[in-house]
Image (cartoon, rainbow, N blue to C red):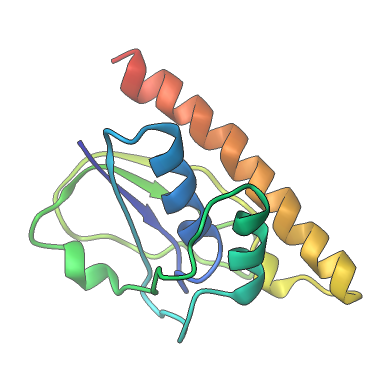
Length: 140
């Protein structure tokens, strides 16, 4: 079963979501992508994931076009607030879901305050993706 985690930049939320969902359910094929991708995975996303023992330092932002032909069983868009318009995916999709999170890349404050936002979003993704796995994958 293939799951695509989609946001705009593919540098924070979708990258963390990809790794977290893989940790939750290793049987899933999980990928992430964006439409206006960043140059790299955000360093604070890498740091936040390392805190929980998950290494995303080798992940890279990917264009959604890489996945259009094959399609996916589940598409999870993770875009959050008004600054963040969710991109469209035009490939074949079994089920589309929106599970929105704030974009920690827009966090403001001290270095520690900004990192706290990355931690909070990471924990929200862990909680909500565990629910997704329970409701849509395990109880299917």
